[in-house]
Length: 288
Image 1 (cartoon, helix red, strand yellow):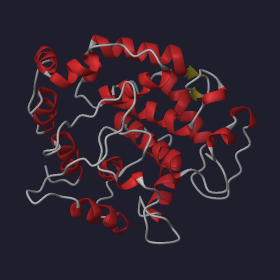
Image 2 (cartoon, rainbow, N blue to C red; image 1 turned 90 degrees about the horizontal axis):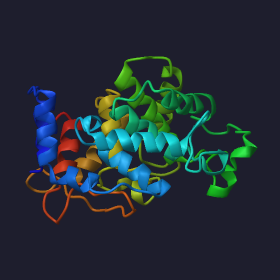
Image 3 (cartoon, one colour; image 1 turned 120 degrees about the horizontal axis):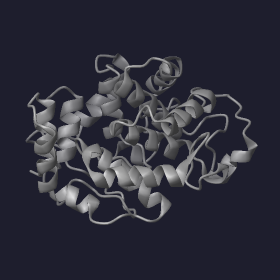
Image 4 (cartoon, rainbow, N blue to C red; image 1 turned 90 degrees about the vertical axis):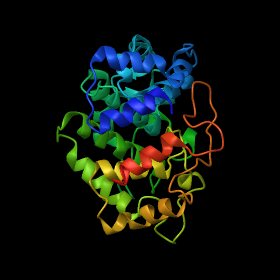
């Protein structure tokens, strides 16, 4: 087992470590070595590296991470949130939300740059159908329909998860009205299904994959269910049943999709038990 995963398990079971002991464990981790061996240059590669390193326990203590966040802020931060081009041209709700979630996991939830991104979600992200979004300068039409009569489910769900991650990191309630509305919309969909028929919303939403990528998947969704304390809600039963149906005979999980992009690192290598993914799912289901 990688040292970073063992550290995550120990910490979540209540074992205490000093900061120096945590850093020692992280420096032993082959995953951490892989994530910090170079510094991405392209915009998207910065996003994926930030997301991946945000899943490392106490990853914010690494000097590498601090430099990475500085680079992300310099490259993407705007008064209205995080844009891949640093202006309205390449602002996408899903990427804005993923960056917010990563920064919340890295202890930066109260940074002004994060606040601007959260305010954009609160003020502009539709959490229901039939809402007209009049932001012509953002050119959402170039990306296939972030905000048509039915908002893109990926952008909506990732924005809801970002609001939940902010709440988890700060215990603040200022975005709760939007969070509740978006959560209700997701629950109407049983989190991963179409409203019109008993089928997944898209091909990748049923992937077993970790860390998150552009493709919203059931691992992200079950962690959201746990954090939002919805495991006993009847509308989450289909998602829970689906995940349990994908367990191996020995009660673990294997990833079935590996996202590929510069800066992105799959945590579970090989064809055996996917240890990181299994732990995240079991923890989310209160099985750990």
